Image 1: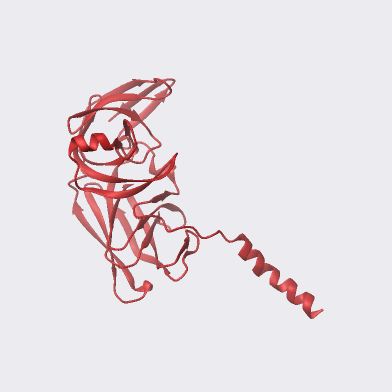
Image 2: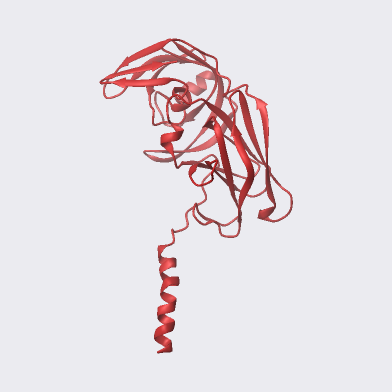
Length: 278
């Protein structure tokens, strides 16, 4: 009878082990997870840059949540002594940090690490870049601390946008518009599902892009390693946007106009016509 009771008592523990999500490889620096793409890619929202600077010797997963802390918005991996920048809609958020050495998954975090709920709000403001400085105050993972700094944006948050309205007709199942990246001509495909504007390696070489931060991207073909760099100007149709960051992907042809740019405009679709307005 005791043996039967013991076996029954152990069943919940075995079930919990079976139901637990399996451990996965640690995401590469710059790889992000979008938990709320509807919010992140909503048109008409103003976005600003958030720069995560990891000054610790341990990898960190930064989880951005709504200010109440009950809904994840996105997460991004930052390796030791690495910096990663993301664009977020203007709002106040809460921030959770997962830090350690032995990674498992987004639910369990690091098996030998800590979850740190950063006190205060991560305020993303127009015309400012928010720097999140991650630094160790001691030898243990729980000694990781975060501080916020504001600096006037010279790249993303203070865009100079000119233009009126742009009408595009659907072609071959998509919307395309001629434009330039730092005066290099490109044909953009409008892609509201892309978080970043993307150009090819060939175009980047023509631009002479040297300072390009390595980043991992999830594509339909799997995970690829590219980079993100800053440029002074993009124009498409009758719009011009100054001081932006764009992604460069290997083995990629053409150019995508993503939500980091499109999100600054109002977009309306009527039948096969797409209208972009400022």
